[in-house]
Image (cartoon, rainbow, N blue to C red; front, side, top):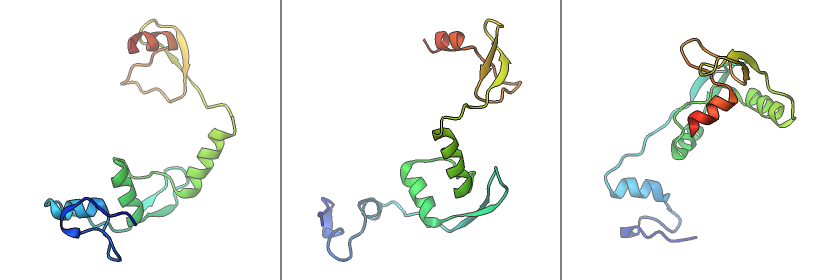
Amino acid sequence: MAQSNLPGGVCGGKDQVSRGVAYLILYGGSKTMYEDKTLVCKDCGAEFVFTAGEQEFYAEKGFQNEPTRCRACRQARKASRASGAPRQMFDAVCAECGKPTQVPFEPKEDRPVYCSECFAARRG
């Protein structure tokens, strides 16, 4: 097992503490304690548990949002994308040149939508 470079021998041996926790302890941070949360899937409406471990993983990765779909709906959505099935497209009118276009999201009235050419030109 690799030893830590942190001072004081905090990490290592049987009672090894993760480097992140050790860093927080040594340098005055505090470890957030997570509790299981019950969330509702936006696709099927079923309740699912967002476990404390999953919350900690999301925090470590820097994810800002909680999951909105249950495991089954996430897997089904992933499988449908991987199967090569065409995406649902929505009709729109380009806010820049005015020509009709299609986009892979439902346009909202308060946000401009651009055709491929105008979008590429804006990205510069």
